[in-house]
Length: 383
Image 1 (cartoon, helix red, strand yellow):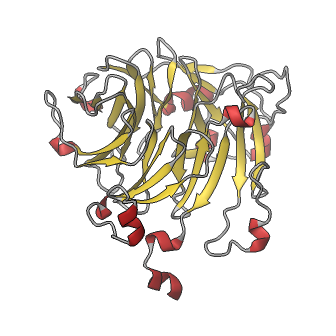
Image 2 (cartoon, rainbow, N blue to C red):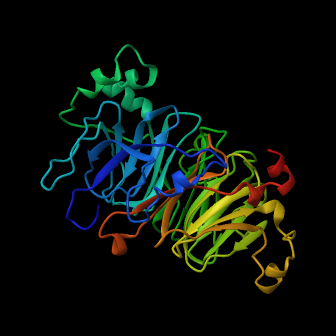
Image 3 (tube, rainbow, N blue to C red):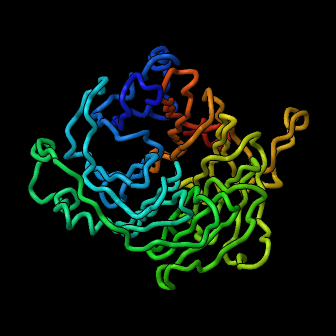
């Protein structure tokens, strides 16, 4: 919440995703745009110290999450051990299990990532730095190995434990190379030693722990304006996406990126009318990705369809940008983050920052692209 009437909260909820092609009238009749969905059940609430700008889950243990707020610190929470709180005015804040220190100025809103290969966390800040921590340091300090290895404690036993103060963990490394605030960071999906970052200096920087704290490749002017987001393709780690304040998404082949010259993207995707805030590759199809922007639209692109858009009568009258095959326009305001569901193909959760229209907080939507959008009609009919 951001209007001051309620404390800032971190909510853990369970969602029942309706199965494909069974959205019957009994389901759709329960939908009310002004009310909470009956398919989303709140499980636990934490009173968060400051606004929750970004949440990332530790791949090695989904009970442990990191949150970015407006302070220089990254907060780590063991969701199974944290007690449930009631968000009332004057309620005391929940105590993070771990505080990751190292930034000298406030963190940027979205620059936070977890490593899929090792329990590493990276963050970007307004101090122009990228900071890396090892969650192993926190696990040792807190004896939080129980949360990872399930060494005998039940959830109820761990939930009854209340921490009196947070353990502070110093960084493993501080990486300097940006000349302005770092807006997003991302690990290489197949490596624990490689990651990249983008910032308000329009630079895309690649880092490699094996070569120290200096950039391994610094791409100047990767786009024509501030870079807000970056993502690394898990199917082909040579492919990188960047999103910018110039309303476009660039796709790069990192094998063609070297320092000292202006890069040529594989393709420039143009379909938004406002700055890009979030991009993410689809986990189920290597050529597909989504982009979300301040225009409140979430676009779904397929690079394999670039130059191959169907020339229907409707398309001739209003041609779609190359590669664009779906637009989600259900949000009232800018979309600040979204995620593909790896277990439910073509299902997406997106969050918008509609404080002005809702009186505080944002709106979470969970939705699925129709089969007819991405599968041949004949195949859908048969299934």
